[in-house]
Image (cartoon, rainbow, N blue to C red; front, side, top):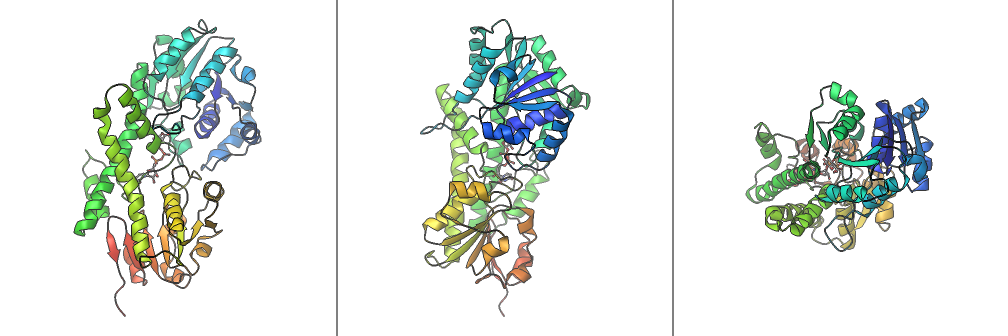
Length: 443
Ligand code: UGA
């Protein structure tokens, strides 16, 4: 099947590569020439495990190409996936859908064969219906139809999530569109992937509801962490205990610094804004609380870190391990780790940041922080280590050896990632968010 993927950011590039891997003839289109040149040369513009290997593999088959020419991308394609970004609007909580609108207009302007336009971007509910009407009024009304097929991939696990998704959602308005989507995903459906056919609005809702639920689950356990800190209870054990209840489930109950990235924070805000437009603000008021709890965890980390260096950051040196919003990613959009680093810097501390993959992106966002090539370098002679993103390499740091690297053996574990007893046994004073402080035995 000949497939056009509009937008080769994180979602689009991964989708294009995976579609080609599944056997389709794919053309990836973007207006960003540097990105297209890199992808065409087999180089990934971002860090994602397994991505570059699969990109090289499918480029060699000849089934995948990239272009900045819209006519070349659109002409002859049976399916056009819309994979462009929907960032938060400046000065508002609503999503900015102008790239989605532009993508659909470009497809309509160049279509020369019958095709299905398939939205994958996360959009305000009702967008698909509006776009469907716009296509019907366009020059390509007889050629194009719209469907919505939301994406659920996670950064760091994008290839796995695309090739082995938990479910496929087909928002359609005709049997022909449903049949086309079945053909696109035939290999996944044959393998038994659950798939649901819905109307357009339900398909849009599935995505925003899923991200809202995940954000709520994280803020729930972080709200419990706030209470645990007051009564000397242990949120890690609490999360484990709750997770044994199959109705609750263990996943996304990791208390810590909360959620960041380019999706959950902006998606819950955009969903609330959309509910307001629909006259349903009350239904989603809780998402505002979810957001507030999330932001409070960053403030709490800054407060604890400040107390751990004696209440005054001036003249103190602090290592922040991690800059990405989560491990196995180089994405620093709304990164809790970088927010904490920047806040400590603002309070006068010399902040030394390390991340295995995200330094370049972090530097572009916060150029005034000190960036180090190794975790050990970042921690040299510091008064405090803040573990802010739980990369494997930080979790396997040897606290015995590291004791001689730092000035003061103090660790703030904001992700509940390290073996606290082991670190304390090695002479460290450890504060874990939602678990409180633990000091080494005297003498
Ligand atoms: C999220 C969703 O998980 C995907 O299903 C969705 O497709 C994607 O957004 C999207 O809308 O495109 P992602 O942003 O890649 O994926 O990252 P998550 O794995 O959801 O993590 C988000 C944040 O929550 C991270 O900062 C992570 O550290 C934090 N988190 C996650 C916690 O604080 N606790 C947890 O238990 C889990």
